[in-house]
Length: 433
Image 1: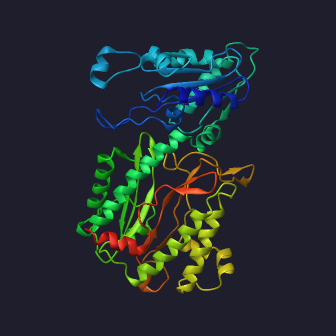
Image 2: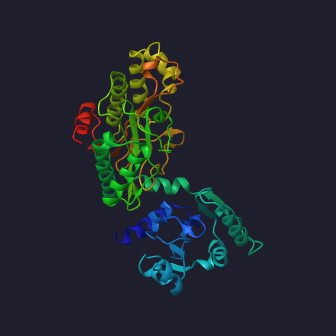
Image 3: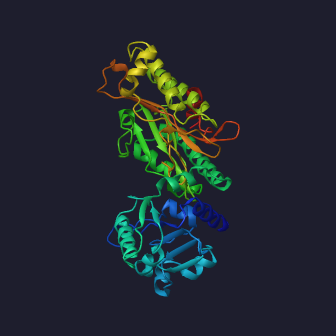
């Protein structure tokens, strides 16, 4: 992408900062699996969003004052030997020339120069608590800056999480195109899994299929650890062991999405391991599907972000009453929250560079409204574990259906609806293998 877009984002964000303030955003560090074996480097999302820069151990300062300097970056220095082993480094000159920062320095200069940068400012902002050890660094730099002159005013430290998060909440056209690509790759992987699950012996074999399908289409990494949960394992919401043998009479819940060029996707489908829903499985599945469809319809500009949640709760409560799993009438049982024994999570979350993306859900005590360019997941579910006080025929059924939904000017666009949710379509697809 043209690096001018990152510069434009920095300028736009600086204009939203308090006057005479500095925003600090640390990049990610190299993380080691063991000994000297490093994990694949993944840049911090906030840092990448505002820089496009993908080298570790870097730090960015965005400034709002009258001296004309909008952005400063500290980067790994040029080093011929290290570049032979680990690859090209842009260095400070490259950071200015290629990534359009106003000034750039070696990262070895951070501790010496940061107090000078902060000296005289009124406020320093950064995402508090997001990076281990960085809170203390900011305190130390700010304390030193304030101590340079005994008559200096104190420097306030503020959390910038909402400032940055809400800037990222509305996706531009380029971001939407990348997310669509991630969704397309993930959708194709889900379809392949449905076609091949009857031949699979274990959750792990299905997980490996997803990772392979992601990678061969350009999504080298999953956006999160896949959930591949057979039978009652689906009732553990963040189950990631993915090591049990598949029981062909049970359902398989797969929550998996790839990352493509730093942007996430997030899809969940639940389908029968043997290619055919049982009567009980189908009855529960249809309740979740109805809730999912109704909730997606509520994702529209001007609607409250909690509208889909309330809709899903009522559809699921009514469906469980009809099956006799919940006793009572809809309004009373919804008010009591009886559904929470079987549907205990929220309807969805923002999605973007992070699968659980940044951005506020409330402002001044009120839930915000959907707006064009937001992307949310919609993922209702019903989970009936073996410990539930229900008839045995319902036990061990865990179902979730999840899509990624873009808010548009006139409503919404489901970015992942190419993966079937209709049970008859799923069964038909599974017979193709």
